[in-house]
Length: 578
Image (cartoon, rainbow, N blue to C red; front, top):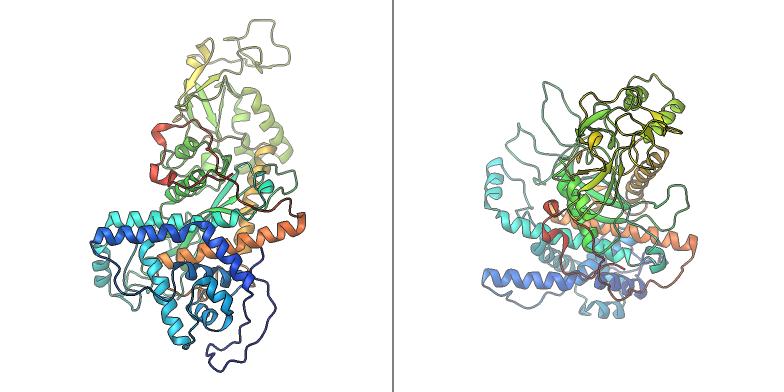
């Protein structure tokens, strides 16, 4: 499957004018790249969209077909990414002119004429932008600096419905590239992944250091980008009561959702790939990018497990924007808290929520404040903290059964039933206290969790902002959270390796515009995915050929209907993953 490895064969061609002598590309490399791009289904879908746009505009394409098409553009970009070359138009033109055999040209449908690099440069440029025109949500001039007033006119000319439609197209194309790479995992290995995903954003610098400032009459050459700020959620807030924020770079953020381990204590059972991607201004619409990324995973039929993220996503998002939509898709949540989010955060029917879990209202204060004492006051050591987190579990409310189709979960007091873990005078008959913690001070005004004989039904909105699936602070929670966070940070470093994709070097992807930068970023992430698969197979052996099997019907899942994302996020008519 390796596309990038090859024997360097210097060319002695007087027509080559790019300052280097590139090697020929093996025909098998081109065939492999074609297979991947064709498997993504992108070219067929883009052709359909292009026809729809022409019909909507009431006109045909006109003129003769271009020398290069969407398929050639994507294949050449993939080949360049896999061999560690910059994704530059000059390099793509050099591939067409100097690095393909006659058979490779025939596979790509390129005419065998040989008429000089400048022409192939122009042809690739036009073909690339023909592709972008179909999926670019933010069109505008890219060949010169604009004044503030000119930029305001560009913004006013953009149609919001058209922008939204093309944003959905661009998201689909980027995620289909990743889906094609995932299909290269042997099926027996791919099916070992149970759906755990860690999501995070990484900065993507624009080519050119100058950004837009409030004091300038001009906007940046990349006016759809913004400043990335190291602190907080990475947005540029301006001055906040005189505080100056360090603006690290001008560019965007790529939201990456990476496959995470099923069992932090066990060996890697599969390569940890990026399974979904988003792109936008730093710190802007964090919840929206998260919902679209996870929605893409669900739409493609992949398994649903735990969603792990840092505090920018959970719990800082509004629950109706992120937490509830993810739970509606079937995800459990795993995350950490700021120091001002520790202790009691909410109550319902008399129960108290402490760091994401529901407890008896009479849980001792020393247990309620265990994390505060450990992280904020630093008054207890790690061993004592672990003991108190373990003791908390005696006071946990128990789910009587699974949530119903609307997300309502019947919860039982820890002092009720045969599985009771505490003794409470409101619930427990005298004499049945062996092995249980004793509640000496019951609530003076007990609510339903204390007075109901069986259970209390908790709605999905109760504690939705801070609720999570694992017991916060426990060894299980720490292992899952720390391993997932290390995994995604490791992938960020992997895809930015200067010897391969070099994602953090903007000079290697110079085509301007939001859509082009999103597409090139997705292509580089796809390349990193394929490298990881190669490494995994070499290390563990190939269990079986990575041949796609017939699609199967996705299994039915309970839904929180009131919080499901819009249908366009979750369904697009694509076959589910197996």
